[in-house]
Amino acid sequence: MAGQFEIFTDGESNVRFRLIVADGTVLAISTAFDDKRQAANAIMAVRECAGTGLIREVRSTPWAGQRGTRNTSPAPTARRHRHLPAV
Image (cartoon, rainbow, N blue to C red; front, side, top):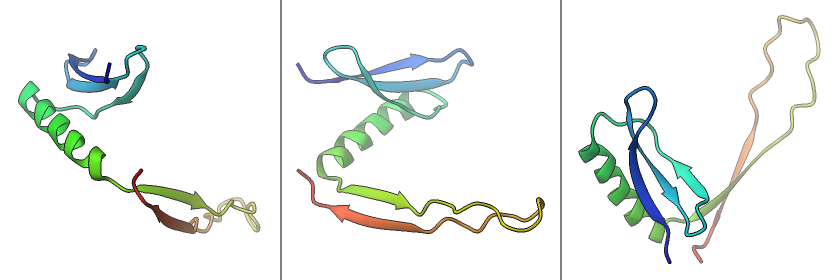
């Protein structure tokens, strides 16, 4: 059996959806939506995008530690993006 989407109302009365696989494992939980129609539209967008979306690996360079005074802001982390073909 394929996974399924569940639309639910969270503890703060926001409408959300979750993607659940056949064994009951939750793979994803959405952001909050104002109503069920918006959540259903987002599910349709996820269905469309997931089938054709590329896999992208994002790696960051580990920060070497803070040098200097305690109030110094750390340098921004460099990121490398690599696109992988869909399987």
